[in-house]
Image: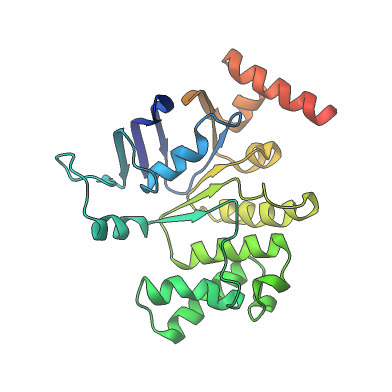
Amino acid sequence: MLSVDRLHKRFGEKVILDAVSLEVGKGETVVLIGPSGSGKTTLLRCLNFLETPDGGTIRLHDDIIGRTANGAALPEAALARQRRRFGFVFQRFNLFAHLSARDNVACGPRRVLGLSQDAAQERARAALDRVHLSAHGDKRPGQLSGGQQQRVAIARALAMQPELLLFDEPTSALDPELVREVLDVMRDLASASMTMLVVTHEMAFARQAAHRVVFMDGGEVVEAGPAEQLFGAPREARTRRFLQHLSQDVKA
């Protein structure tokens, strides 16, 4: 479904992504792990051209993203249409404080997809039900916990009916007691075969929910494989060191 071939990105002289290649199949949950600064977030942002790659090719269902067939940059209107095929859940919730949860979710379908007010509201209600927030649709963000706000952000992405859902450290801004409710929703989506690419430091979620895990370090894909293989018997020394450090941090 998603194919990334030799993606490059640099900021000034610093190489952030160095010939990164990966694939995500339809219905798969693929989790990206690795130390801070390894390029995981930049990779997500390059997929829908929130950051412009310096080289390489991204395909979604064989359609080249961000470029024409001859390599020229797409016009902004065409790029905007492509971005609708991706849902993006950020670290921060970025909700409109003056709107209810339901209106936050309905905003995209109404303004971007052109749905009627009634149709957008119905889609918002269905998306909030999917993240177990049906009873909170009339509340504004300030009346919700951080975990509930992040679930509204997930519902907002779902309401656009994307082909691929991208998560960038969706629990990193949450207090520890609120992390589980967000991960439970993500597990539900994975069980329902929502295609997802997830950047996270939540190793238990990666082990339980991922079809495959990709370990990145220094802007490269060091190792990738089924979750049980990568966590249970990693092949690469850099992967083993990273997982050992995580284990030591948990024990400390």
